Image (cartoon, rainbow, N blue to C red):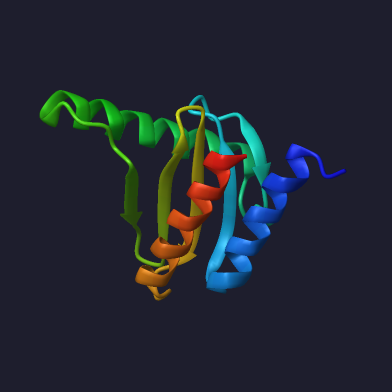
Length: 121
């Protein structure tokens, strides 16, 4: 029988395989605790999870204050990278880091599908 942890790992691996552009991915709690991750050695696993969750929470509070709506996705870019965060469930965020030259539309579509899979687990 497959455990929930193995299922989480499988959906992250599938996301990376389907896009071919994801450098690091994780499922984390809104507090930044890691549920599952495929973060490479070049990225600090704990920092990736904690800073991503904190950034999403700040954006969520901003959106709630300004529009009285929930945030579903956050995207930010640096010179060379993108980070994308989707709300998968109330208790889980899906995070991915890509190169800036990745096909953004494809990554967003696959992340949305992956978030729906996580919601069903």
